[in-house]
Length: 138
Length: 109
Image 1: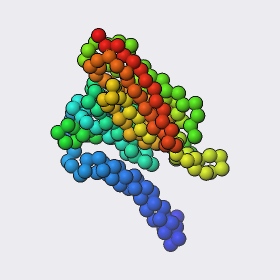
Image 2: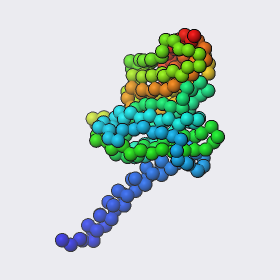
Image 3: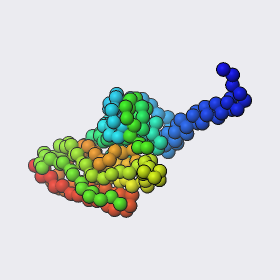
Protein backbone atom coordinates (compact mmCIF):
# COMPACT_ATOMS: atom_id res chain seq x y z
CA UNK A 1 0.00 0.00 0.00
CA UNK A 2 1.37 3.36 -0.93
CA UNK A 3 0.56 6.68 0.74
CA UNK A 4 -0.47 9.58 -1.40
CA UNK A 5 0.66 13.04 -0.44
CA UNK A 6 -2.89 13.76 0.83
CA UNK A 7 -2.97 10.68 3.08
CA UNK A 8 0.38 11.53 4.57
CA UNK A 9 -0.73 15.07 5.37
CA UNK A 10 -3.95 13.82 6.92
CA UNK A 11 -2.07 11.37 9.12
CA UNK A 12 0.37 14.02 10.18
CA UNK A 13 -2.40 16.45 11.16
CA UNK A 14 -4.31 13.71 12.99
CA UNK A 15 -1.37 12.65 15.10
CA UNK A 16 -0.47 16.26 15.84
CA UNK A 17 -3.99 16.88 17.19
CA UNK A 18 -3.94 13.64 19.20
CA UNK A 19 -0.64 14.62 20.75
CA UNK A 20 -1.78 18.16 21.54
CA UNK A 21 -4.79 17.15 23.65
CA UNK A 22 -2.87 15.52 26.56
CA UNK A 23 -0.39 18.38 26.39
CA UNK A 24 -3.14 20.87 27.05
CA UNK A 25 -4.39 18.92 30.08
CA UNK A 26 -0.86 18.57 31.41
CA UNK A 27 -0.41 22.33 31.04
CA UNK A 28 -3.60 22.82 33.09
CA UNK A 29 -2.26 20.50 35.79
CA UNK A 30 1.02 22.40 35.91
CA UNK A 31 -0.85 25.71 36.09
CA UNK A 32 -3.05 24.46 38.97
CA UNK A 33 -0.02 23.13 40.82
CA UNK A 34 1.88 26.38 40.31
CA UNK A 35 -1.11 28.43 41.50
CA UNK A 36 -1.26 26.35 44.70
CA UNK A 37 2.45 26.09 45.50
CA UNK A 38 3.63 29.39 44.04
CA UNK A 39 6.43 27.51 42.30
CA UNK A 40 7.87 26.03 45.50
CA UNK A 41 9.58 22.66 45.42
CA UNK A 42 7.39 19.66 46.21
CA UNK A 43 8.70 16.84 48.38
CA UNK A 44 7.47 13.31 49.00
CA UNK A 45 6.15 11.63 52.13
CA UNK A 46 3.94 12.87 54.95
CA UNK A 47 0.81 12.64 52.86
CA UNK A 48 -1.39 9.64 52.16
CA UNK A 49 -3.80 9.40 49.26
CA UNK A 50 -6.17 6.46 49.34
CA UNK A 51 -7.95 5.68 46.08
CA UNK A 52 -9.09 2.40 44.58
CA UNK A 53 -6.75 0.71 42.11
CA UNK A 54 -9.68 -0.08 39.84
CA UNK A 55 -12.86 1.99 39.78
CA UNK A 56 -15.73 0.43 37.86
CA UNK A 57 -17.71 3.65 37.68
CA UNK A 58 -15.84 6.89 37.06
CA UNK A 59 -18.82 8.89 38.31
CA UNK A 60 -18.19 8.15 41.98
CA UNK A 61 -14.67 7.22 42.96
CA UNK A 62 -14.10 7.33 46.73
CA UNK A 63 -10.85 8.98 47.73
CA UNK A 64 -9.28 9.89 51.06
CA UNK A 65 -6.45 12.30 51.78
CA UNK A 66 -4.54 12.44 55.03
CA UNK A 67 -1.61 14.75 55.75
CA UNK A 68 -0.86 15.30 59.44
CA UNK A 69 0.19 18.91 60.02
CA UNK A 70 -1.15 20.24 56.74
CA UNK A 71 -3.06 23.50 56.41
CA UNK A 72 -4.47 22.75 52.97
CA UNK A 73 -4.65 19.83 50.57
CA UNK A 74 -5.19 20.22 46.81
CA UNK A 75 -6.53 17.24 44.85
CA UNK A 76 -6.08 17.00 41.08
CA UNK A 77 -7.30 14.44 38.57
CA UNK A 78 -4.57 14.74 35.95
CA UNK A 79 -6.60 13.23 33.11
CA UNK A 80 -9.87 15.14 33.51
CA UNK A 81 -10.93 17.93 31.11
CA UNK A 82 -10.61 20.26 34.11
CA UNK A 83 -8.01 18.69 36.40
CA UNK A 84 -8.94 20.53 39.62
CA UNK A 85 -11.05 18.43 41.98
CA UNK A 86 -11.04 20.44 45.17
CA UNK A 87 -9.06 22.09 47.93
CA UNK A 88 -9.46 21.18 51.58
CA UNK A 89 -8.52 24.01 53.96
CA UNK A 90 -8.28 22.93 57.58
CA UNK A 91 -9.28 25.31 60.35
CA UNK A 92 -8.14 25.46 63.99
CA UNK A 93 -10.75 22.93 65.11
CA UNK A 94 -9.95 20.26 62.54
CA UNK A 95 -9.36 17.05 64.49
CA UNK A 96 -7.06 15.58 61.88
CA UNK A 97 -5.91 16.87 58.52
CA UNK A 98 -7.90 14.15 56.86
CA UNK A 99 -10.94 14.14 54.62
CA UNK A 100 -12.71 11.78 52.26
CA UNK A 101 -15.10 12.43 49.42
CA UNK A 102 -16.22 11.01 46.09
CA UNK A 103 -14.93 12.30 42.78
CA UNK A 104 -15.47 11.94 39.04
CA UNK A 105 -12.76 10.57 36.78
CA UNK A 106 -12.98 10.79 32.98
CA UNK A 107 -10.79 7.72 32.44
CA UNK A 108 -7.77 5.81 33.68
CA UNK A 109 -5.37 8.37 35.09
CA UNK A 110 -3.24 9.52 38.01
CA UNK A 111 -4.86 11.25 40.95
CA UNK A 112 -2.52 13.75 42.58
CA UNK A 113 -2.73 15.22 46.07
CA UNK A 114 -0.53 18.09 47.22
CA UNK A 115 -0.46 19.23 50.82
CA UNK A 116 0.73 22.56 52.11
CA UNK A 117 2.33 22.03 55.51
CA UNK A 118 2.18 24.49 58.40
CA UNK A 119 5.83 25.44 57.80
CA UNK A 120 5.12 26.38 54.18
CA UNK A 121 6.61 23.30 52.52
CA UNK A 122 4.71 21.12 50.08
CA UNK A 123 4.46 17.35 49.73
CA UNK A 124 2.65 15.25 47.19
CA UNK A 125 1.24 11.77 46.70
CA UNK A 126 0.14 10.17 43.46
CA UNK A 127 -1.95 7.12 42.69
CA UNK A 128 -3.11 5.62 39.44
CA UNK A 129 -6.78 4.70 39.19
CA UNK A 130 -8.00 2.44 36.39
CA UNK A 131 -11.47 3.48 35.33
CA UNK A 132 -13.78 1.06 33.52
CA UNK A 133 -16.55 3.53 32.64
CA UNK A 134 -15.61 7.20 32.48
CA UNK A 135 -17.54 9.79 34.46
CA UNK A 136 -17.78 12.80 32.20
CA UNK A 137 -20.87 12.04 30.12
CA UNK A 138 -21.09 12.34 26.35
CA UNK B 1 -31.47 25.68 39.33
CA UNK B 2 -31.02 22.89 41.76
CA UNK B 3 -34.16 21.47 43.31
CA UNK B 4 -34.84 19.32 46.36
CA UNK B 5 -31.49 20.11 47.89
CA UNK B 6 -31.49 18.33 51.24
CA UNK B 7 -28.47 18.24 53.51
CA UNK B 8 -27.91 15.11 55.62
CA UNK B 9 -25.38 15.23 58.42
CA UNK B 10 -24.15 12.73 60.96
CA UNK B 11 -22.59 14.13 64.14
CA UNK B 12 -22.29 12.19 67.42
CA UNK B 13 -24.79 13.44 70.04
CA UNK B 14 -22.22 13.59 72.80
CA UNK B 15 -18.47 13.49 73.24
CA UNK B 16 -15.85 14.08 75.90
CA UNK B 17 -13.83 17.31 76.12
CA UNK B 18 -11.14 17.58 73.44
CA UNK B 19 -12.26 14.41 71.71
CA UNK B 20 -11.79 14.08 67.96
CA UNK B 21 -15.06 13.17 66.31
CA UNK B 22 -15.91 12.13 62.79
CA UNK B 23 -18.50 14.11 60.87
CA UNK B 24 -20.15 12.85 57.70
CA UNK B 25 -22.15 15.13 55.43
CA UNK B 26 -24.08 14.50 52.25
CA UNK B 27 -26.19 16.95 50.29
CA UNK B 28 -28.43 15.95 47.41
CA UNK B 29 -27.42 18.05 44.42
CA UNK B 30 -26.99 17.15 40.72
CA UNK B 31 -23.51 18.80 40.49
CA UNK B 32 -23.90 19.40 36.75
CA UNK B 33 -20.31 19.49 35.53
CA UNK B 34 -20.71 21.68 32.44
CA UNK B 35 -19.15 18.90 30.32
CA UNK B 36 -22.30 16.98 29.44
CA UNK B 37 -24.51 17.60 26.41
CA UNK B 38 -28.27 17.17 26.13
CA UNK B 39 -30.07 15.27 23.37
CA UNK B 40 -29.68 18.16 20.90
CA UNK B 41 -25.94 18.47 21.42
CA UNK B 42 -26.12 21.62 23.51
CA UNK B 43 -23.84 21.84 26.50
CA UNK B 44 -25.75 21.68 29.79
CA UNK B 45 -24.49 24.67 31.79
CA UNK B 46 -22.44 24.07 34.89
CA UNK B 47 -24.37 24.12 38.17
CA UNK B 48 -22.48 22.88 41.19
CA UNK B 49 -21.89 23.56 44.85
CA UNK B 50 -18.55 25.31 44.78
CA UNK B 51 -17.77 25.68 48.49
CA UNK B 52 -18.54 23.96 51.76
CA UNK B 53 -17.65 25.17 55.23
CA UNK B 54 -18.07 23.74 58.71
CA UNK B 55 -17.73 25.90 61.82
CA UNK B 56 -18.04 25.05 65.50
CA UNK B 57 -19.09 27.91 67.80
CA UNK B 58 -17.76 30.38 65.25
CA UNK B 59 -14.38 28.68 64.77
CA UNK B 60 -13.59 27.09 61.44
CA UNK B 61 -13.20 23.32 61.16
CA UNK B 62 -12.88 22.83 57.42
CA UNK B 63 -13.38 24.92 54.29
CA UNK B 64 -13.56 22.97 51.04
CA UNK B 65 -13.39 24.44 47.54
CA UNK B 66 -15.23 22.13 45.18
CA UNK B 67 -14.79 21.82 41.42
CA UNK B 68 -16.97 20.04 38.82
CA UNK B 69 -15.01 16.81 39.41
CA UNK B 70 -16.85 16.27 42.72
CA UNK B 71 -19.53 13.60 42.30
CA UNK B 72 -23.28 14.08 42.31
CA UNK B 73 -24.66 14.36 45.86
CA UNK B 74 -21.33 15.53 47.32
CA UNK B 75 -20.25 13.48 50.30
CA UNK B 76 -17.64 14.66 52.76
CA UNK B 77 -16.16 13.01 55.81
CA UNK B 78 -13.76 14.81 58.14
CA UNK B 79 -12.60 15.10 61.75
CA UNK B 80 -13.26 17.84 64.30
CA UNK B 81 -12.10 18.59 67.84
CA UNK B 82 -14.82 19.56 70.33
CA UNK B 83 -13.48 21.67 73.20
CA UNK B 84 -16.93 22.44 74.66
CA UNK B 85 -20.64 21.91 74.10
CA UNK B 86 -21.96 23.85 71.17
CA UNK B 87 -23.30 23.91 67.68
CA UNK B 88 -21.82 22.85 64.39
CA UNK B 89 -22.83 25.07 61.50
CA UNK B 90 -22.65 23.67 57.98
CA UNK B 91 -22.87 25.87 54.89
CA UNK B 92 -22.97 24.94 51.22
CA UNK B 93 -22.57 27.64 48.51
CA UNK B 94 -24.29 26.99 45.19
CA UNK B 95 -23.14 28.38 41.81
CA UNK B 96 -26.53 30.09 41.42
CA UNK B 97 -26.01 32.07 44.63
CA UNK B 98 -28.15 29.89 46.88
CA UNK B 99 -26.76 29.09 50.30
CA UNK B 100 -27.87 25.97 52.15
CA UNK B 101 -27.27 25.77 55.88
CA UNK B 102 -27.85 23.27 58.62
CA UNK B 103 -26.82 23.03 62.27
CA UNK B 104 -26.16 20.17 64.68
CA UNK B 105 -25.78 20.41 68.46
CA UNK B 106 -23.33 18.36 70.46
CA UNK B 107 -23.17 17.86 74.23
CA UNK B 108 -19.61 17.68 75.55
CA UNK B 109 -18.98 16.34 79.04
